[in-house]
Image (cartoon, rainbow, N blue to C red; front, side, top):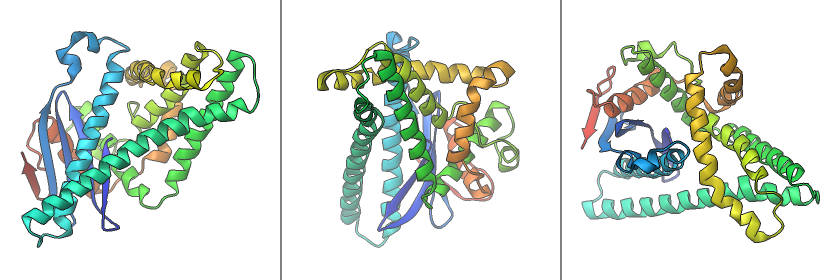
Length: 310
């Protein structure tokens, strides 16, 4: 989850970016007063501690779980800042209570979203495909995959119609521009980041598209599910699908400048035109502060005041 948006009292007041680098993760958010608050901390992947989990096709599932945990922590941090900004006159005890309630609500929301996502993208397509009474395992899984892809694309399109989502997509674009700037070894400032594209081959949007396509192939080996247990068994293969997709997204990054491999990357880049928007300078500043902090550098970017939390 590269960017976050937290709503307090019905108003979206905190927006920010999370960046992860080897050995460190950072979250930067811009407060309503214009200041940027950044929190950076050491983080070593378990794949570095347990070599087996770092093997290809296993590491992808681990990285996905770690990313989910880090994303929830980033939202929790943003929520704490939002609570503080909501009412600075409250006593310390009341602020702590508000923070606990915000974290509880956030945890429930994340859990609900996770369950809803599994149901929407993996179980609903099965139910729809079952209406066709297909006997061939290949035909069944192909139609199931087409439904899954259609639901995914429809979901992406529908959320772009949500007005508040545009700001998140702008921060998404700022994240990509910042990463491109770093990868080209340019100075991490707004002027250097501006010319870069908002479309990046390692984007989560591209990754999700790969997941949808890989799931079709993986489920082909499971045949046609004839009962509830066999349908639920497919959920156990989600980490496998994630692991394979992770390896493919790594390859897509390496082949980004190769004309032959770029053909396979283009669908993901086209889809990113829906999930990224051109950011303004203030959004680029937040993304660059997060990136510099994740890299262990001095986070100051531009004229905004940066508050560093430890």
